[in-house]
Amino acid sequence: MAGALINVPERAKRGEIVEIKTLISHPMETGYRRNQSGARVERDIIRLFVATYNGTEIFRAELHPAITANPFIVFSTVATESGTLTFKWTGDNAFSVTESASITVD
Amino acid sequence: MTPLRGLWAVILLTATAAFAAEIPRAERRSGYDFMSRETRAMQDDDTANPAMLWVLEGEALWRRQVGAAGRACADCHGDARTTMKGVAARHPAFDAARGRPVTLEQRINGCRAERQQAPPLAYESRELLALTAYVARQSRGLPIDVTIDARTQPFVDAGRATFYRRQGQLNLACSQCHDDNWGRQLAGNAIPQAHPTGYPIYRLEWQGVGSLERRLRGCLVGIRAEPYEFGAADLVDLELYLMSRAAGMKMDAPAIRP
Image (cartoon, rainbow over all chains, first blue to last red):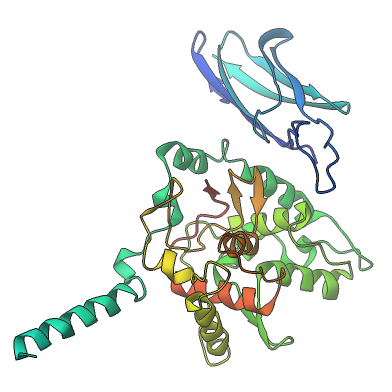
């Protein structure tokens, strides 16, 4: 399953700094571990997280092995206009999840 | 021996006996209280608590029709937020058909077999943990309230006997850490009192959600004893005893633990 929890404030004042929290379900298998028969467990991680605000990129993070399973990414942005925030996680094994949330700015 | 010396001996013996006794009610503390400020903050914020990913999945599974009967949990039980309130706080609970207490996991699989005509979910499978986490979430903040009566008392006693029985190559009983030495350090971690208030938990060490049975099996491996199988009677009795020992404490499932 690929569930994600997004927390964006529903409303904000123009110019206010808002905190955005994202949590996604992912094993983040490092590729360095071996299984019980000694074979290497294939790497399976999220490589990239990108957040856009009405189409404009506002945050980007590259993820690497040794980052926790179910990565929790928190960042902030300035509420400029009402619209949609889109979050995209991409990674190994054609992993791709897109979620969005709306914000009203007054 | 002078009378005074005799008195001292009696006091010393009483003190030793008191040391090995159960934790007084007023001194009981949840595993939550032993955690760092950061880990507590992680548990308290539903948007930061990774166990909520399992709860989210459990909510979807609750409504999914499965098995030959084509029925979902919700078709019988309705809205879990009301019907499942307090259910996790009452398990393990006595099951008349089996003649013994069953865990929440066993209850869910029993429901699958009888009402949904679906194959059981494997212990520690993502689906079973998700459903358990979703049901346990509905008991958050409620006091642990397992039923201790004539039917369940023998199983509580069996669980208590396991708790106080030394086992494994290290020859340790559960009580030697969790009754006698709680609050002290073991390899850099605080030893908690072993109150199962938050199961299933998201354990940072596991990088995932796991059941109380997984935790107990981990402890057994730690004392180099052979762990009981998932769902084994010994394990369920021990869980029942631990819940009775924590009776009245508030549930904080699904909790985070280090």
